[in-house]
Amino acid sequence: MPKILILFASFILFISSIQAQDDEVYDEIKNAEMSIPSAPAFAMLGVNPEIVTRPSNLKSFKVDWRVKNYNLAPDLALEAQPLWHFYYKKRSFDEYAAASRFAKKLSTLSLSAGTAKIDNINHASYSVKLNLYKKNDVINDTLLLKQLTSEHKHQQDRFNQQIDSLVILRYQTTDPKRKDEIERELDVIRYEMKNAHEISRLKYRNIIDQYNAENWNNTMLDAAFGSVYTYDNAGIDSLKVKRAGFAIWLNGCLKMGDHGLVSGLFRYTKIGNSANKMFGLNLRYGSQRYNFYAEVVYEVLGNYFDPNQEFTFDEEEYFAGKYIEDIGSGWLDFNNTESKTQYTMAYGGDFKLSKNILLNFALRTQFTSEIKLTRLLPVANIICLMK
Image 1 (cartoon, rainbow, N blue to C red):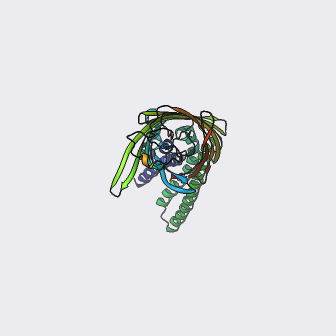
Image 2: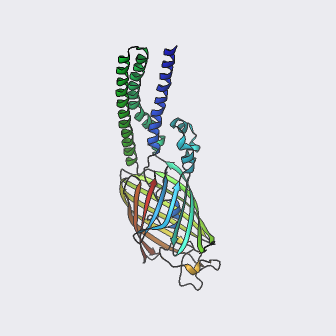
Image 3: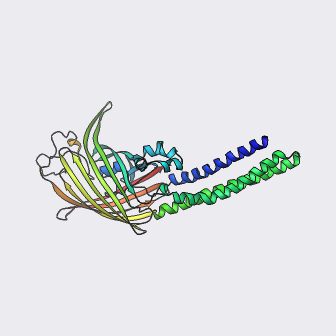
């Protein structure tokens, strides 16, 4: 009877080890990121370097800092996928794989919030974004998971069988010296098993990193909505807040070979009774570690700063007295009677300072519809994954 109990316990440990192996591979997969784009809340405010942002499906908490006057400004944005982080991330691979396509898509729901001082006015924003399509997603690649677990599973099985045999032998042996010898043999096998496990985890990580490096320019499509507020800390115990407007946008990207990526953006912005429309195209070349881009953006502006107007601001815009134009992307309600068009061309890039920290930079050049240069702006941000 005791021998049967030992065999049963060994079987339970064996089954548990198989499940643990799958979960360990899954842990490596679900904690890996292909790219680290700017937060949508920052993109709405126009303080991120690239105007035509890349779609993203980040599974980690992320923070963006604006670099201003060669220092980190107090302007920052946070982004996370709450459904993924608090529900799906805690599930096993089998539970995630069994989820419906709609549930998996819902897990990509991203929330971001940010604050920035633009044109001398404090702005706060929030955004809700959903990934509609992603061509290559490592977390849905069951073939890769099986490939990673198969070799390690056989190796761990061999160690477990040796341990089970020695445990039974130790139980059956009555000689104390022989028991000590078996215990030392068990210690050696457990040590070898631990080393093999760590080597396998490193191998998983390298394979997954290689997978993400090869798909950094993945084909994707995102849809998003966001809202912006302007505010002023008028006094120690008071805060003036105004809802400035909202934006809705669609942006996608298309993989071009191993090193190229073409991104597109359409955004509709409503401020007061006026609306702005934006169409942009971005061409990016490089790798996951560093890449460079050039983009062109065409805007039809119904709300813009025109100092030549007799009444520049809408009469209900009570932050007008604080307005000082700098980056020119503020969300104040102007009193425009006609729309205008403008072009923006930007040149910049991304550089990974480490696995979880990215430097994002660009030089923007803004033109009128007659291709007259009106503005030259350097913009840079630091983006950090909170792992």
